[in-house]
Length: 253
Image 1: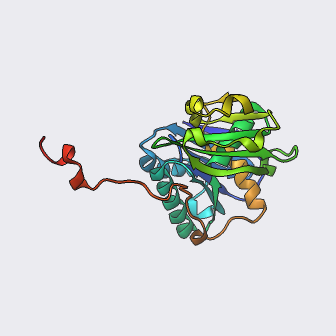
Image 2: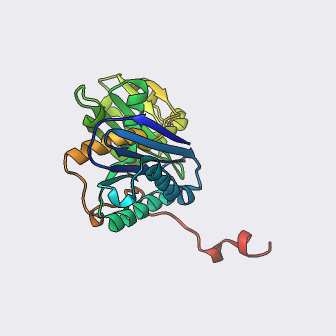
Image 3: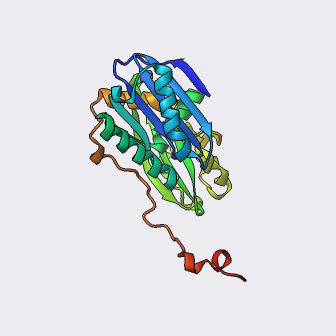
């Protein structure tokens, strides 16, 4: 479903999309108008992303070649989703000449929660699967809104087992919101209940809210050429079994 909203004013044509979670989303800012689309389709990002972007361009009345900047969710998050995002971003950049900028998926999740709950401090947690979680903590600076979305990183994006999530640096506050589907492991994270003021598990990074982060980065000159933008996995290695080692799939019992 396409949604038309009014966003912050920018004379540049900026595209934002994200495939790091179970949501596939995209947003396009054209002269102060933000066109956006999002679908909850965990395994169909590859089929949805380009048609979604094309639909937004048609809705906005522009061609991809008219894009000035492209921002994307760089991770951490779904390995497949991140590969799709960087491939689409680099392909579009090479085809159109638009510059690129990667946005932390945890930062995007935190910003989404800040807008949803009108708070300035968020601990973002995402289910990393394989018994682990991605987490980071962000604080909104000042009272600026819209295109002046500036966040400070209090805890760098990290990957660990739920029981090893370390929020000790926040111990003297008690004014933090916990957000993201990583909270499903809250019973395994002893610091959660004592350090977080409230929690919302139903928050995901979505392109429409990421647009504010992208426009701030555009104003700050952080967009670059394609070769300088890469996904962030955090997990260095993944244990894959060779096909020959999967007898249940290849051989009769």
